[in-house]
Structure formats: C-alpha cells, structure tokens
Image (tube, rainbow, N blue to C red; front, top):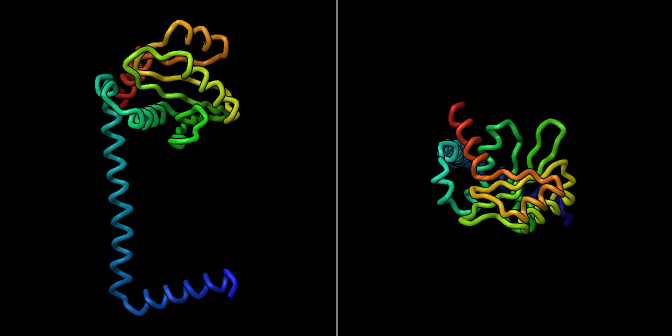
Length: 174
C-alpha cells in the first residue's frame, strides 16, 4: 500500500465515523469553532493589555513578553511585525516590514545599559535576514561603545526615552 492509498483509506475511515454519528459531528464542529473563538478572544485581550502597558510594567516583563509587547507596539505603529523563533533567531527577535523595507530588531529588556553584544547580534541578523535596516530596542539606555559601534554600522538605537515616546503615542491613539 502506498502513501496516498493509506491517506485515502484513513480519510474514508474518518469520514465514515463522523457521518455515522451526527451528534459526534456536531460536537466536534462546536468544539472546533469554540476553540477558535476562545483563542481569538484571549489573543485580543492579551494584546489590549500589552498595548496599555506603561514603562514600569515593561521594566517588570520577562524577555519574551517584552518581545511580544514590542510586536503589538510596532504593529500599532504601522509595521507588519513577526517574532522570530526562540532558538536559532540569528540575533533578531522581530522582523518588521513596511512597504518595501525589511527591518530586524533585537529586543533587550535590561536592568542595566545595553552593550556591544546586542549591536553585534543585530548587525549579523541584518545580513542573515537580508534586511534593509536593523534596530536595537531597550527599556534602558546604551553604553558609549554600543552607541559608537551602532553609529558605524547604521544601527538605529531605540532607548528608554524613545520607547516611552512611542508608548505614549500609541496610548493617545487607543
């Protein structure tokens, strides 16, 4: 028996079970639709909560939550924003697109100033993702060497002050 015959046989068996018991079909359809609706509602409320976050809440976030927060923030600024995978991200946490431009973002939610490593990572991510620009966004500030390296590599640094400005702009628009 080849693969397609097995798939066809499996589908026919599945279809036979579903059509033999109409109540089971109804329950499965209601369950599936309910799951999709519930997931959508949870996602909506989570994004609303993240959108309303202030800088003090940002300071308490875990790194992954900060990345998700930036995704919502940047979408509200008009970018198509996608998170990269947790492992193997090649130095980018988000990939943005806006018209014909691709931007990679390294997110750093730190209690101390962000150093050279974040700039180095996002520069390598720019090449890997074939991006037009690269940014590092933090809830803090940057060390002098990081600023110098960023300047020489055309990396946009978004520090605490600019992040708070963006957050306020989004809150006014909400």
